[in-house]
Length: 95
Length: 481
Image 1 (cartoon, rainbow over the protein chains, first blue to last red):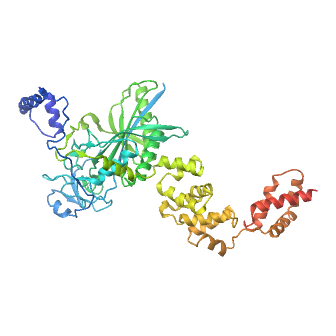
Image 2 (image 1 turned 180 degrees about the horizontal axis):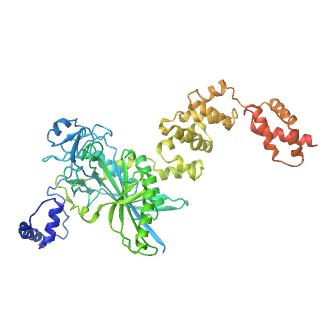
């Protein structure tokens, strides 16, 4: 499956990745070849096979509804570049 | 041209769990910012979400209540987008195979007819954090306490045809989730939120018009006003020769208008895929049966029972079954009273609701408990006091002055049923109202009301009104002879 330049630009934008003009052609070729490889799966006849949502053939384990965590705000916020009034400060976003 | 409005709602109900959907952090409202956000909620690398069993149970409960299919197998997906209140860069939600599919809810419209609203699906997902803009200068502050709170997103079919219908449906869902005890329904705290997809098309047209998604409809009044505004806006655009753009719009309640938030096409390219961190959720028949057994009497079944068992009017039933607490209160009063459910209903709908509204109290916090109200009503039934005096006694009970019997005794409010005493009062009234007596004799029957009023006044409201009426009629006709 061949991706277009626009496809790559669009995907890069959605992923917030900056891709230079020179790199785009390279990504078009490489991503297309990955899709071609995956497309080979489509050649297998899967009639009657139930689709899998996960490679492990197991069901999700559930946890009881208990509060097990305590406040570690100070510890976690040591990793943050900018904190004020207990909040993580980020560049202004407003709709 | 005649226009038809088409509305579908997406309601987010916060599930009433103690801990988050994928972590052991508390979901309690109102904590200091970021004190209830752990590594999973903060989206640190290498952590693993583990699903909360209670969230699954509450979602299944909702599914069973709306007659939906509760999926024996459902899966979680990643919904990818960038926003500062979403640290992972994706929200864990359900896309293919949601936990609840294909249910419906019957709503009652203003004209008394019923309408079935289809519910396409209800899926489990995690909430995002909160962005705050005040007192932070040029920055935005992020509080991630809400991140990871379990939500049930309830998606309706585009079955509603007016703003009023949409608000009625939203109310019905709100009532249901509270009956089921799966959500506290607190709209101020954001526990129950709604987005509306609104479009218009020429009447008779089968194809749907281009829709706008309205966000931030956090009250029943706002949803109605926002949709009204949006319908007008879209019709104006089309009639002016323009085209409606598919977009997300935010309702501004201060200005009573909707305004564009962002273009939807790109923002809604979420690139869903199954979350590799979570395995499929499998539910067995035993679990479903167990949840089914926990279902309370549902609002519409209760309403039907109130009609059949108590013979109440539909308007009263709507008020009495609005919440389980109100219905329970009414039933407790009716049980104390014995055989007059209509009297109990009148008082719960009338005096009690009035007092609760006046003091801004929920019925659970009523200053007069149901058995006490039942005892008061018994005193009306047995003729100790009149309905009018009962209101005075009720006020005193509300103010904590004692039981009905104590107040009647202390204030000397016992009804006068002694025939001689009433006759005396009647005689005095008639002797001082010669003019009205003449009018009565001239055939003006309406003056009787005046006499009754005068006698009641003279007795400070304590004379038995039925006896007063009877004696008055008798005396007046005696005199006429």
